[in-house]
Image 1 (spheres, rainbow, N blue to C red):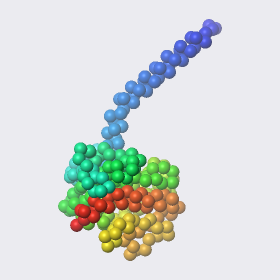
Image 2 (cartoon, helix red, strand yellow):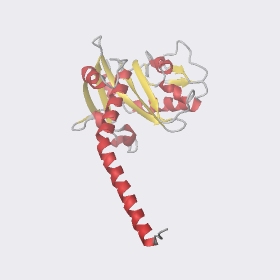
Image 3 (spheres, one colour):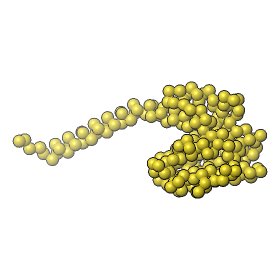
Image 4 (cartoon, rainbow, N blue to C red):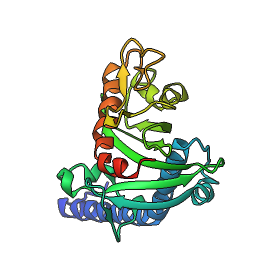
Length: 233
């Protein structure tokens, strides 16, 4: 059996590692456009879901272009910021900035009934990681038309229930203002009263995630307060 020197083994190892690294880099470069496309499509599907338009990966882009009529970015004072594409703004990154420096995306949709809806993104924390979503409002900018939520790693059957239709549909017709005062939405353990227009039922066994949703809605939407009050009808 031929003996291999340590130098030979070292050179062979270096060559193999370098080759694998190059192949992985090439694969990442080739797959990047597809990954970016998938992220774009998923985001458009979520925005459409918040206005109660169901879509698939094959028709999401077309439906997004049909229903989303305008997008823009504002600051916490309600001023429109020119030169920034709302779709490219990452709320997770914006939340790392001081509030006065944050960019807030706004999506304006028109549904099949001809109603104008405003969609705002949400970003927060659940029990095990990030949670996020979108919420759409009717022309009064207080009454919810629809929501969609998602999560990174909440527990199946518990916190993960935030992305189910049963949980999301509770938010329809709820209001975030009470006589002009921002009150947000309460996610109530044990269940909200039927007449409570500011409350929904928490997830059984998912209290921390439920409270994460409550905090996410309150913290994110309050930043839109000045814009909403200037544009309510």
